[in-house]
Amino acid sequence: MFCPILSSEEPITLVGGGEGSVQVLNKALQFAPLLVAADGGARLAFEAGHVPRAVVGDFDSLGDLELGETELIHTKDQNLTDFQKCLASLEAPLFVGVGFLGGRLDHQMASFTALLQDTRPIVLLSETEIALIAPRRIRLDLPLGMAFALYPLLETRLTSRGLVYPLEKAEVAPDGLISTSNEVAGPVEIETDRHGVLIIAPLAALEPVVRALRVPAR
Image 1 (spheres, rainbow, N blue to C red):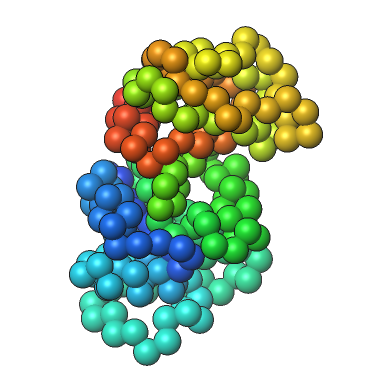
Image 2: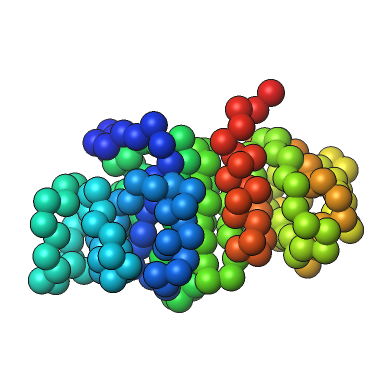
């Protein structure tokens, strides 16, 4: 891995070369105004009228794109995805990612691996949903009836409250008990014993999730 090259005290939006839209990118920038592109993700940034602070990658997807004064952080390691290279090269209190969900399934699964490898707050956006690894403890104020799913990427002990189907210190695993197709029934509280459970919720949950992630844990 790399040492951070660019540090920010404010959240960073990462834009990748996968499925993404100008609308979703602009939504991410409302919560994480510093923009960094992962290689070909720079194209969506410029399409949206934004100049990224930096572009990270091996630049095999940039083509003849004119980057102006954008900083180039060149990383050649082919064992890492562009998303992983971005995370390894940057430091921030929160990352919001666009262009890392949807599209090719192998790319999406690689994004989940990157989330597992990094314990910092990282929220990925698709056109309709958000995905993030649950912190050890989080409380979310979400609308009643909102769809809400918990999917364990690793064997984990999970407590979930405020859902139609809650769990209390349940042993969950990708090849065992999971908690998908759930629904918000009150203030949602999630507790886990390790970094390994994926939260999946509608895009409308982004604001309360970001607000919860930016509050220091007690």
